[in-house]
Length: 165
Image 1 (cartoon, rainbow, N blue to C red):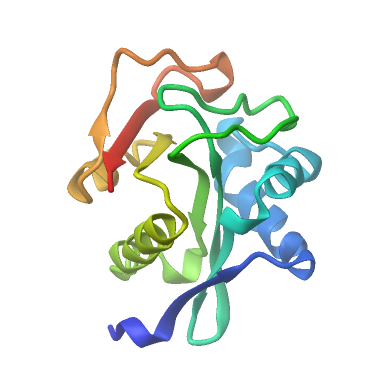
Image 2 (cartoon, rainbow, N blue to C red):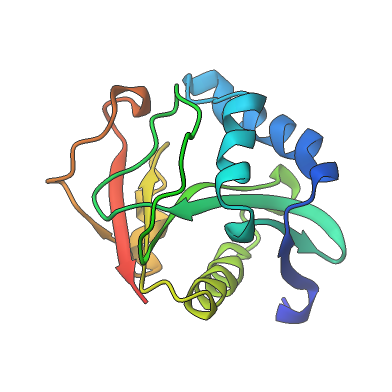
């Protein structure tokens, strides 16, 4: 699949309905859904690091990312109150639409995310892998950090991971 059909663009106010609906479909059944206001709080704190993923000009998913100190992450039950100053970009929520899953697009999107993070001066990306996604992230070069304690809101199977850029 050609990389030129895939791009990141800044998240716009008009994207929130699609973001919230996709997030609910991805996480509600597992109890990990944050809801509109908590999601929007992440976007308000760091709009320069929140993106829509497009494939052939259509909404293909989103990334809500924000600077966060290494080894720390947002609690799913709390709105984001302040912008952390950090060279670590925490990829808090990365979801691809159902129609685009299992088509091998994740590595393309991740490369674009990593390139954008580097261009903004970040030297590391972290995340909390949920729903057994740590397998995918490990293949993309992210390392698990079992020593990092996570908020209870992530459940017992979540894995904190990171990668140096």
